[in-house]
Amino acid sequence: MICNITLNIFCNHLHNGFKTRKVYDMKIGIIGAGAAGLAALRHSRDAHHDCEIFEKTGLIGGTWNYTDRTGKDEFGLPIHTAMYKGLRTNIPKEIMQFEDFAFQTPEDSYVKQSDVLKYINDFATHFNLLPHIKFFKNITKICPLEKGRWSVEVRDLKLKSLEIKEFDAIFVCVGNYSVPSMPTFPGIENFQGTAIHSCCFRNADNFKNRKVLIVGSGPSGRDIATLIQEVSENVILCHRSPLNPKDMIPTNIKKKPEIQKFKEHSVVFKDGSEEIIDDVIFCTGYLYSYPFLSNDCEIKIENRWVKYLYKQVININHPTMAFIGVPFGIFPFVIFGVQIRFFLAYLAGKLLKSKEKMMEDLLIYMNKRKELGIPDTKAHFLGVTQGEYMDDLAETANIKKVPDVFIKIYKYVHGEGKGNRNLSFKIINNNEFKIVNQNAELL
Ligand SMILES: Cc1cc2nc3c(=O)[nH]c(=O)nc-3n(C[C@H](O)[C@H](O)[C@H](O)COP(=O)(O)OP(=O)(O)OC[C@H]3O[C@@H](n4cnc5c(N)ncnc54)[C@H](O)[C@@H]3O)c2cc1C
Ligand SMILES: NC(=O)c1ccc[n+]([C@@H]2O[C@H](COP(=O)([O-])OP(=O)(O)OC[C@H]3O[C@@H](n4cnc5c(N)ncnc54)[C@H](OP(=O)(O)O)[C@@H]3O)[C@@H](O)[C@H]2O)c1
Image (cartoon, rainbow, N blue to C red; front, top):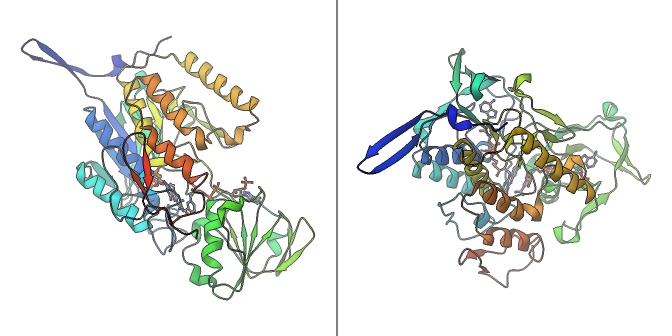
């Protein structure tokens, strides 16, 4: 059955001489005012939709806001952001740009957290987004209604009141990096030192002269270990996947295999070696989490696979709901734009696909990945294939393509330029870039 979405759209026909212009006027609810939610608002307004963003904190920018606070906020909700002092971007700012809004300053490419936050705020001001944002509004429940519409339960955290709102379509833009994944390890209950997840790490200075174990060698593990080794007595990095020599991990960081067990004041690794430690930081990643979706939304997460999303965006069972930014191993800001325009094209009836066909396409995609040996836990991993992914979205919905120069820079910084955050890039045109400081030394 073709889901004729245009039936749900209030179509207003304006007669202007010989021309007839169709104005789509859907009411769209956007959950979260991070980079994804702000981009969703900007593009939805360009498409003449009536939009509201609900943000549970008092700030835009989501993850990019730094706070000393960890644990719970003043309303008893978990702190959303995992930002820490000293963080620099791990991809150049040139591939962290929203569409039509250049990230120009500072000149460096690998910029500080505060530079990214400023860029996001400048974007919101430039596109006049702030009047549409409802702050301190926590979305606690979303349920599907008839004809593709949605009921949204909005909790006002300051007034402590509850309101139910209805929308024609929903963008879920709540980010993926706020609910920690905490594996259990034998003996951890006996460990007498401090143990935190990287979502609560704020400042390397708290680990001055300490013996610190970092578990996990993803971007958080590698970066936090590098910051801490400057002040600590000893840093041990325990990794499960092989380390890439190009990641340039300082040589005074001891590398160890997986953990066998914790003891009161030490840790034993699978190779039988043992190290005395004061503190552990679990840099073991995050979980997808959408606690506000009712069961009727028919979204389930199994083995880190958010089921079932068409092209990693559209809820196949209820296609007037989109998820922005689910893929990982990506340059997020650029992908957000194309995912949002893809969903808006669907809402405008430009992408006529039945639920059955969407599901068939998804299963073909997943089977192809299985044949390549990619496990379901990496269902949303894109890496260097994100250029093909973005082209596929653009072709499927007949929307503007993302310039190839972005994927070219991404491939460069994950290949030849890996580990060198001193490089600065300049985009020349849609296909070409240049490195401005060719002689930059490796860090
Ligand atoms: C430590 C760290 C470093 C990173 N470094 C980089 C980097 O160098 N370069 C890069 O491109 N990316 C980086 N990222 C990825 C980063 O997540 C993205 O750049 C981007 O911030 C994601 O934007 P988002 O809008 O999807 O999510 P978020 O920024 O997480 O925003 C989600 C928003 O939704 C709100 N929200 C959540 N639930 C609700 C609810 N129920 N009701 C109302 N509001 C809600 C939150 O308060 C938040 O404001 C990093 C991530 C982390 C954790
Ligand atoms: N700008 C920056 O410098 C910066 C800094 C921090 C984070 N970030 C961003 O933040 C996001 C999250 O990164 P993240 O590093 O927190 O999460 P992540 O990328 O999911 O990495 C988690 C790591 O934990 C490891 N792990 C999980 N369980 C383990 C176990 N039992 N034993 C040993 N290792 C285990 C994983 O190993 P396997 O690989 O074997 O699965 C993986 O390497 C990413 O988008 C990243 O780019 C950016």
